[in-house]
Amino acid sequence: MGNDYHKIVFATNNLHKISEARKILGDRFNLLSLSDIDYSVEIPEDYDTIEENALQKAGFIYKKFSLDCFADDTGLEVDALNGAPGVFSARYAGHRCTYADNVNKLLANLEGKTLRTAQFRTVIALILKGKEYLFDGVVKGEIITKPRGGQGFGYDPIFQPLGYSQTFAEMPIELKNSLSHRGIALRKLADFFLSLP
Image 1 (tube, helix red, strand yellow):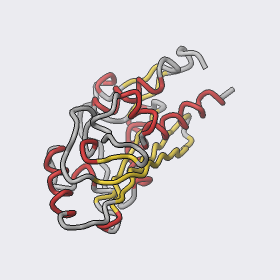
Image 2 (cartoon, helix red, strand yellow):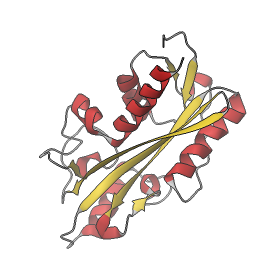
Image 3 (cartoon, one colour):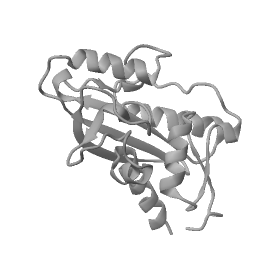
């Protein structure tokens, strides 16, 4: 599809996510951020699952602006913590916490544990002409004991994907995008757009 097909909003205020999405999706369509549509208020996400939160965010923007849009929700699921922080990954250390606060809380909760396997899971909810679609992406790995690397964001400095010796925060962005949970889900989204008549 050409980039004049239509505009689509990525329902997030997170500039890291917007940048990542633009790199992966390229110029396949006109991707707008929430600031591009003059919306800066936090979107509600108060459900107990990643899927429900993604649909809630996309639905909120679709109803308010009548624009095709998609939203994502991501959770880091740590086996030794019974899947926590999961749906609460972004606010694991409390509301208004920083990425570093979340990382420090997770490392503290894993102290002394030998089982450090984990997975990142992203669900993208797309609302296109009123219809809902879901796309997911999963990457498995482990939580290292100390942060490494200055790239990426969130838990990237302590997540080392399976089969690699670098954390997401140590990898060039192109390599991370080719492996990451959000990258997988975004490529499924892009493939879906390419399949449209």
